[in-house]
Image (cartoon, rainbow, N blue to C red; front, side, top):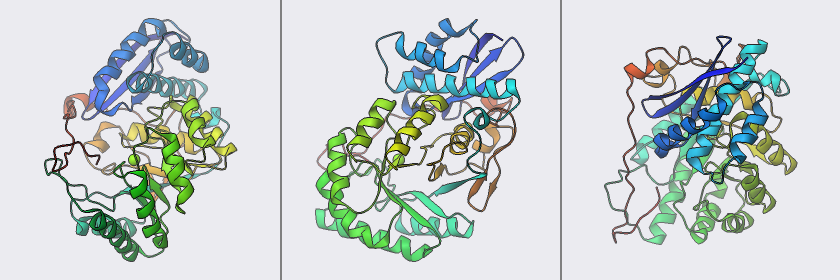
Length: 379
Ligand SMILES: [Mg+2]
């Protein structure tokens, strides 16, 4: 079998890669490069010059070749490599007539626990989202900020004491809204300094969040380790990391209790299986990052289905509503807060034929929030 063509397909907010073969088998993958999808598509074009004519089943070899042939890496390139890797696994599954997890060691579970996305620019909306998640049968809510998902046009300002006390009280209200039936995955979106992150974590500890995600900018593993050492809530981080080397540096510092590799950014199924094994050696759980399309969700489920230390899967908002539900032919089955592991060959999902015409590409606006003093804040 040989690779004959590779297509990049922009749909809505997503970039898909389809790899075609001379046996008529097509594999599907997605890049998680988020704000840099055009650059990621350009990297796929570069990789194509090597891949056309190759045997698609030599997945690890192609991964190594593309990662190591030239000097530079980073999100756009790793998003491209991840998309190709997922597509090659999809081809391999279809070629052998089995789901990808079967080729990656076999099933470790039958269904995959997910967390529901909660989003809101008022506390009432966020609390309502928590209640809605419980009513829909989800056992965990995430993307759940103790601050607000406010407009980036509104300059930010709060005193330290107000910022801390308000956030602590808000997490208390989330807990009150769902009781013990739903886990709270508190997402800080890198808004705090290490000093603030420690104060807030101590304040919300009585509400027993499942994890505390990206409390600070993720760039310094030492700073993340300092926060982890001083708090009693598990830290979840790693959505921006690309390689086993970065994850190992984070893990060996004890800076993380739940790693968050993105299958569409950290080297696809090939590399994320290795990241999961590194985490396993540290007794750390895996919560795959997934703010993307149902294609990414399907790839995440293949990983969750074959690793022992899977903890929870991010399940983005609107997965069952257009445009997301119409981008694919049929989405995975969700039952009481768990995705059912599919038994079809490959990653178990196909792009709808009219997806690109129906939902043209919408590039992300380059925009961030400013403080009242004019400086950049994270949100
Ligand atoms: Mg996150």
